[in-house]
Image (cartoon, rainbow, N blue to C red; front, side, top):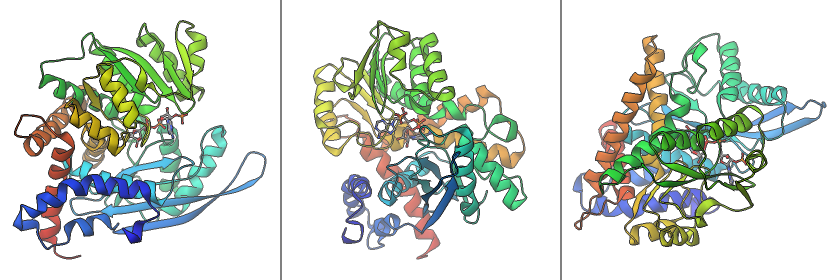
Length: 435
Ligand code: NDP
């Protein structure tokens, strides 16, 4: 703890896992005395570098680039890049640590890593984003590779940024390989990758609801965020007959009692992905909807909550509000969106609650499928990728049930995901010796 005392998000993520894994190790002699958790929480390597770039006015800026290569016991490092002003070592170590267990859960051979920069893409021109991405890759290219470390997108990094970074990597290395995932379809991307995290979060929720004979049909759904994950979670929930009544961004929440249907969602996708505008615009376009400034969706009445924005966006009070308003299911699209106090409320009330490393693993799973397609030199059809995604989400659900089912029948998905993720990585580390 002393070593990482200035890293609150990382400590929070490690505590959540340790609470489950320490008792598990105590009951399983095979894992005792091997310092497995201690080894897992120390990154194999952390790279930190300067990212200088010039804006459209000729002014020079300096950002910090980081890549945390956390664990490669079961495969090359794999995990997203985040561009957001709040990015620091603590945030990336928390995300990298979560990624190791998440990737293990997917059943695919991927280790864990995470990276990014404190660069803020908001308000930047296309040319400025390109220059930043090129400068960032101008150093990162030395440390990554299709069999070493394969970054993907995350907050602030979507198809546009991946394209610019891929172009620069290819130029510097003079090789065309699947070094990044989330690529455009024209140059090696996989169909369904943009949809994968959001769809997967909903598929996982569907599996949870099935255990209690519920479904999405006719339910009201609260979604936070309006980025990649939130958009496709909304699309799939609506397709399954639910009514999505909220979405949000860092300025506030839109609440549309009539539901954000297909046409309204298309407006949001254009607003966020093309115009790069604020969610507030929605209430101007659809005046029956309300814009709630600086507010999150959690005190609105809804049966299912899908937090899809960022870490620690749902606290104890929010959790209590959700439960008292009749929420029966929370499936995390974001990483660590619920604070530990909020998780405790869900579990005490025994509502269906899925931790992000299980419910949002669909994104990295399809990234793994993108890597397979790149190696094969062949692309699967949309239906094929979707079927594989569903199967992986079903498998993750089954693993959570296997390790997380309690005596009274309640499924502790957090416990299940952490143990199932840990076991595979720990077994590989034991077999590979102390390295
Ligand atoms: P995007 O950048 O596409 O969207 C992020 C959304 O969250 C935006 O609406 C943004 O609002 C909002 N947001 C970001 N930071 C904050 C904040 N500090 N407070 C309030 N709102 C905020 O990112 P993604 O959709 O890709 O990622 C969302 C979450 O899902 C993250 O936790 C990410 O780690 C996780 N995730 C993503 C995966 C993927 O495949 N993309 C895979 C697995 C998990 P604004 O526009 O105002 O910034």
